[in-house]
Picture 1 (cartoon, each protein chain N blue to C red):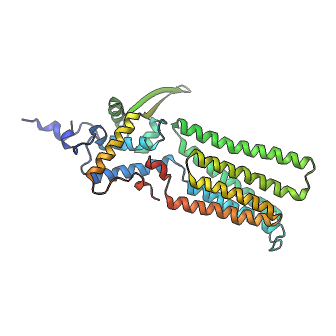
Picture 2: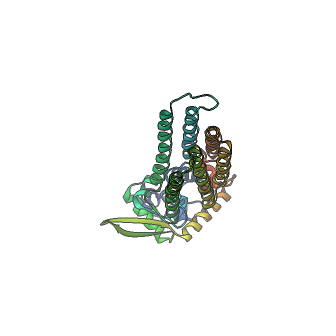
Picture 3: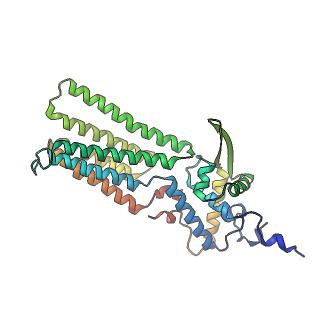
Length: 224
Length: 112
């Protein structure tokens, strides 16, 4: 004879098994979705923030530099708007990375930290290089092309690196697109370069954000 | 134990609801990474006492490693899933798939 009391009631909360395979599957999927959303940055959000910054930031500068549409807005307003948008996108990116990585340690976080520092180091390197060239008598008409062209080269290469690090074709493809956009913008010359940066650059980021959204949240991670 | 109520061929260490949730959450982390106890608690939404109990059972089965360290004089507990744990969870999902008409698709839960 069995003593009834201990067979029916588990001693620990949560010790009871799931009853059907379907319920078990539903539990796995719910918990996996919850963990993925908590642990991983939503790439669509980051790409979207940069897409808006490029589209409106470079768009505003184009509208301020007497392009095809004439001078539609004052230069200071365009500079302020672009500054705010790019700073906001950088803060969103940085904040998300820090928030998602809380309490996690290991190779993946070291890779993410080195990648983050790579962006900062690239920015410092570009600043030093471009300022030195201006200081040594770069014709002032070329300055906007130097700054944007060299920046896009660095951005494109860092996206190629991101694609390699996380085996992500979307990031790699975006890197290629940014390199092409950078070269095209310099070839277009001032002021058309700003239209290229706004439409092709910003558009590229927004398309990537859309692709990422339809593809799912860090789908390659969840499949592992 | 509760093995008589479990489905056949499913690892009873993982099959309990709370331990399954913990196992799934740990399996989402990149292999080899470790997570603090409090962050894991946040990921699965369990009380500290309840989580500790289930972690101990997973540790006894060799599916996780628990390490305690001090960070600025505060004790911090880290949890890592072992290779055996990852393999056990893979076997578990494979066994579950065989019980289902439609197989388990790992990426199904991530649509957004």
